[in-house]
Image 1 (cartoon, rainbow, N blue to C red):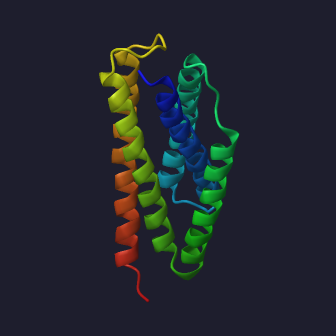
Image 2 (spheres, rainbow, N blue to C red):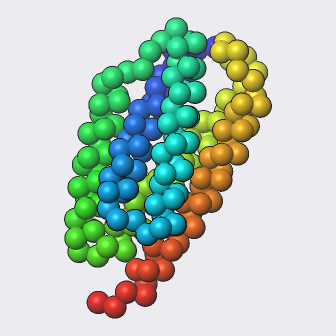
Length: 162
């Protein structure tokens, strides 16, 4: 097993979660409709828990989180949010549609991570595939809920008169 490569892969996912949490924090301040506000609270809580799992895995591989990639993810989120904010000023439904599409992409990547870890049988972490199956199930539920929010936002856009 390439422990360094696995640690790097996990660090990248952990850094991506930093960006996701930053985006969620911005979205929560942007007056989301009630179902979206509840979804954002749920995502924030679950992603924070997933971050903890990733940090434990990274530590078990005798590594540590990379503050530079975390900072890079934070900075990238700020740049991405600027683009979303411009959309919000011009056409608010586009803001929500693009925000939920961004979250959906991250969740799909995270599902791929949990699938890989679930299938691995030689992780030096003391974790079992059941834990990763639960995280995969959670991410698939997140994906479904975010898709529903994305569709609501898209339909609001289509029904908006210019």
